[in-house]
Length: 119
Image (spheres, rainbow, N blue to C red):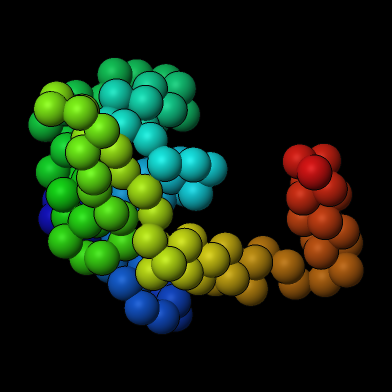
């Protein structure tokens, strides 16, 4: 994996995911999607084109790891959905990030404010 990024003290499969793969999981946490919808979300996030040769091998890896389930919408379109293990990988990542970021009440309040703004 040329994009490999180890995530410190996280448990489970999330530890060995690339940042790109983590972003795919976060996108799929919203709802199941087909490949081109995932691609559009990634392109919006990165501000640049994401080619198929990068997206689909990473989706296949996530399916193989059991973090994403792939199903057929029609003869030409696959849908991707987060599994329970995939959801846990996203939560593990949040836990690790919060443990590093939330070092005092002021920072905790910043996180709480951001969460409340999304509700």
